[in-house]
Length: 278
Image (cartoon, rainbow, N blue to C red; front, side):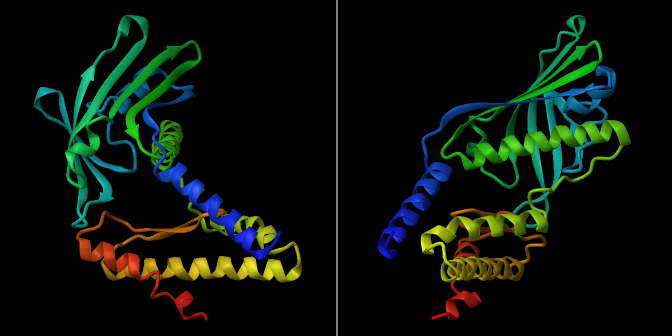
């Protein structure tokens, strides 16, 4: 394969993946995550019910306060644009059938200090707890309208992590943050995988491996530029995620606070050391 053909194929793969992740018309979809627990429903129900006495069990929730009219106000550890904890107000409806050992809580988000309410207009969540002979089953359904698969996949893994953390909380009384994917060892492995996937496009030779390795290094330096900009604007936590074929993504610790911040953080990729290479 010639150099031009390699560039065209690689560009086509990149554009196709970007369209699939960010622009594909996925439409309205419902995610369902289910997990079995050995604990009884009486132990799980106060944590699963957004109005329950243990509704702030999850490490991402600072507090969960019951309001009038079936509303719940939650304060989250994630910061808003001003660096303050995100505050959300949920409308909760109870559709439980205690006689059948089924407890169901339906909710929607009506206020969010970090996002416009229109972002949540199609979002609905159902948390279902079902008694079994050996314990209980928790099932969480989230319905929303999506454009691209990226956010859909993100929510699936976030729900899986939450139920895994719930299992740990029931056993130990502590909710621990699970960050296997973001761990440096995982990201190093993904960077190495990206290098190997790019290798054939430069020729399966020592020279081709050197080129694909240099490209991976350039991507890292590029994302470090974005991360430096996030830090300059006061983001307390920044991280880099490697996506094979697509390169890397720098993620800030809170939503952008202004258009100037958006532009500066985007342009700092060009200000990173990779831009000095000829």
